[in-house]
Image (cartoon, rainbow, N blue to C red):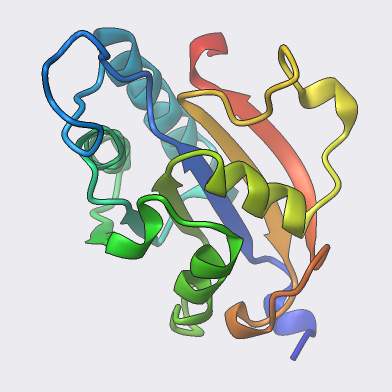
Length: 174
């Protein structure tokens, strides 16, 4: 049901920080690079300084680079925020991410979803029309980037183009 009770809802979509490809670990266990940690801290600080965008829950892929990003961001927030891991986010497509969102309790008004491309970028494009000037080298959600989407429906009623694009914050530009 859309209505005034949902008008202030935001969905925060963040791609993990830059990861370190020089390690001998597999994809799932790949750690953040120093610049990935730095971008996550900058995004966390930005969120803590912008009241309407403080998440009330952080939901992350359990992959090391996403979990590290989510943990760093959560630590930067002034109020303790629950950090949940969801296996479905790793290698997720739009359908899996919509399922994760559809299970959010109604009292959640600003979740932060931390994960990976191409799934997160596909979700953003499914939900909104992003202006062309937000692309960087034909990419939208580069590592350490936060997208802000206004959502005016219940989490289990999200459909294609039911969100409104608000902003894209790149950690490396803060």
